[in-house]
Image 1 (cartoon, helix red, strand yellow):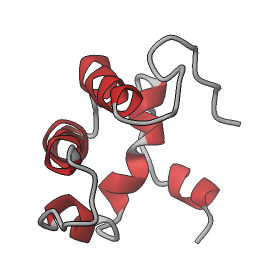
Image 2 (spheres, helix red, strand yellow):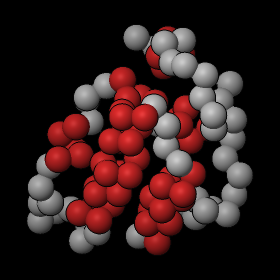
Image 3 (tube, one colour):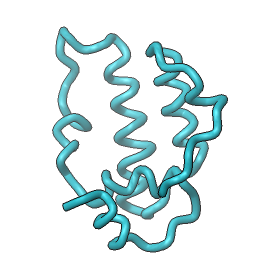
Image 4 (cartoon, helix red, strand yellow):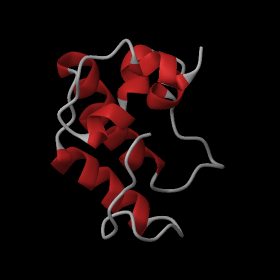
Length: 97
């Protein structure tokens, strides 16, 4: 099923962050990552990032079908701090087509 097919199943969203994260609400495909223990090959920040993604993004999205911008920003700050990706907290993100 194509991603655009998923969006037709969703209620109207209040903000882009919720709409972008909706795949987690509809699928348990990534649950193994959300609950997998850290392995030696993983980044030292694995547990911290996993916890924020699971507890502050995915679980609220599944329960409320909404993720607050403050939760999304917390994840973005972590990813920006612990990766080579820049602009996660300072640049406007593109709109869905």
